[in-house]
Length: 329
Ligand code: ADP
Ligand code: MG
Image (cartoon, rainbow, N blue to C red; front, side):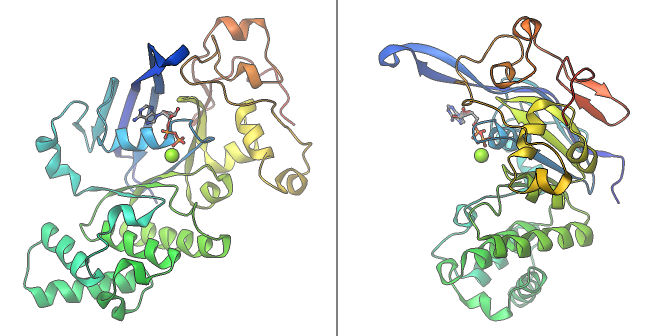
């Protein structure tokens, strides 16, 4: 179970990117990749972050780890404000926060044997004699479901799923408290995905890990997350306990994402709920509610007023001003 102590606290975090816009890219524009997002992750808790491609999930994950400098807001890790700390001052905390990527090569050196890579990571966390580090590396491999002989192999000698297991072992070597997993199974076959999700479940329980689990795939998020945060164009549309949000969404965007999961509406006896059109350009988002151009319930007021994220009961919130008036089916 999770503790109530917050490990990660984010208040109103923003990230703007300067981009070229307009004809011939002459104008300079600001792209609000993450726009005033609040979140909190308790020790041992898993927060799922969902949204279509371009909704700001990866940017949010990188902000929380302070791999990116925020344009505004506040980021605290274990009570320490790291919002604008220079890299040298974040380094002592780095070990406690690790990242797993869609592409495991991103965290593995292709020229290093797995045993050496893990022993090196273990040494950085806690120096010790070589033989002891190698024994710990073998234990780590066992923990992620790989045989000890994997020590002698290079990253390329593994299948995609095995390589992701190696990347997880590499992240765990430094004994983190917090993991950002950014689409960690999205490049894998469905049959392989289930094994990695089960592994993350197991590790989370064994090691009391907190996680930000990022995926565009709601089915995957549902399996692992205690709470979920739904992003659209860098804004939080809805947040709350995963089971509640998935069973009875209170924002049309969440409802549409759920409806887009194959077979889900049929299984839950709901009518299909499709949204039209493409995501608007993040450089020129719609006025008012950014989702209104695709929302079947949008009214004139939605173009005028940007909705705030308002609580619905104790643990949930929705950023739809009509949250109480619409029937999401
Ligand atoms: P997601 O992970 O949900 O697909 P991202 O966080 O990668 O979304 O991107 C959010 C938005 O920010 C997108 O519009 C993307 O094009 C833009 N973006 C991300 N990184 C940069 C960057 N370094 N420079 C300019 N725009 C960026
Ligand atoms: Mg991404």
